[in-house]
Image (cartoon, rainbow, N blue to C red; front, side):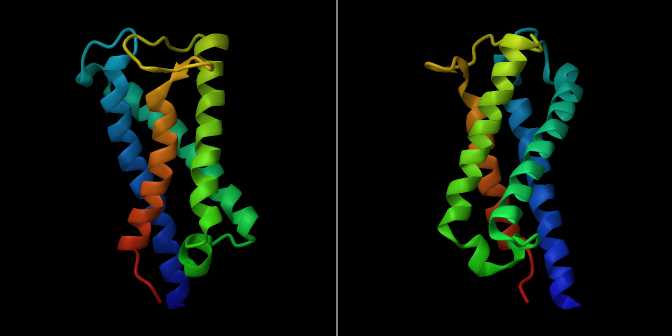
Length: 150
């Protein structure tokens, strides 16, 4: 029973940290997009974007669960400590971010960059890609640090 509670806590910490970090990051990078006027006006846009970021986090979490064949991988030390976890997470995050930015900017015209630094060759924003590399790693690190271990 205690192990199950620890697993739930680890997963909640992962997604809670993800939400908080993504919301902060979305607001931080908001001035780099065309149409930005103020943090107050764009907070709800950033909150909505954070919801999409959480879907990406779910894809990353689920991918690792499938790869490790353990839906509770985040509470299993040999699994989350495995180097593959720390390599696959940013790789999947970067691929998701690049694909989504390409679609959003060049196909759907959902937004345009203003002062966003771009990644050469692919022409997408550097910060959204870094976001999906750094935050998954940070969310796991935070959840491992704060979650109780059994």
